[in-house]
Image (cartoon, rainbow, N blue to C red; front, side):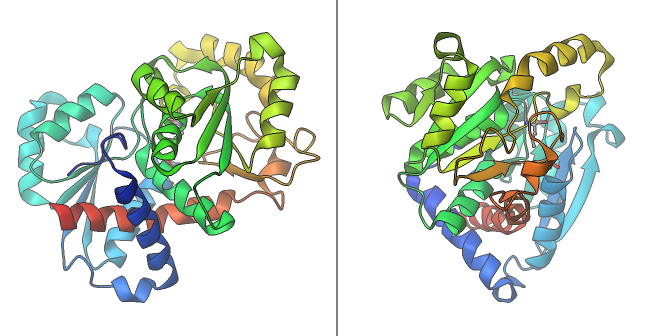
Length: 312
Ligand code: CP
Ligand code: NVA
């Protein structure tokens, strides 16, 4: 069993993982030898703080071993992808892969003979969404019926929130005047829409202010993410597009004024860009659960590794 996207995961798979994550958080000592010396390889093409640390620290705390590979220092780049994945599968028991392109990750997973976890590609970020459901369950005491609104650029994180949410009854409304081309997944959006659990809000029709007012007033959770994905942030070829987006997206910033009358919780997967998609003040607001959310990546990553190792 892999975790490339949450689409093939059932409601039970997701709920059991969330429940296990909370148990691990509450009693980490009970899991100290849970994986009995197994090895996790982290194969990363992109930078990371949370996902990398959650994987490395998580497997170590479970009694296993982590091995980090920066793609650029390996022979993956100059060899056949299938050959290299087969080789890696012979050394380790599970692989956490952060790839630029979803299609390349799918190809890599097909060649692997051990479970592969998607540590964030351009289309999905499933481990983030599982950690986020854990945080929502922890703070609100429920998942079913929770209303979450995502405000920003529709991206990998937004897709995984929709994919996870539609399995467990979390309604995801999205105010996104921009969609990352790699994140376009009409099949996912249509399925979630049919279930009434994905609601895109059209800013062109009702205006930005009314759109934001409508979703934030009705939401338990207000969520945002970067307007520019990490691989493009310092890319000179993306500079013009980055400036265009920043200008277009500024009216969509999450800040204390927008949420002044709301008792919602605020979430952001991090890394955050203070003063852009979210104000620094709101990151540190009493309604922000952002730092619990980032801590929970650790507990949730442990539960994900345990589940995939048990089922392989
Ligand atoms: N949220 C998240 O995945 O953070 P990193 O990119 O730092 O891993
Ligand atoms: N969506 C952003 C943040 C993921 C943690 C990105 O892909 O860079």
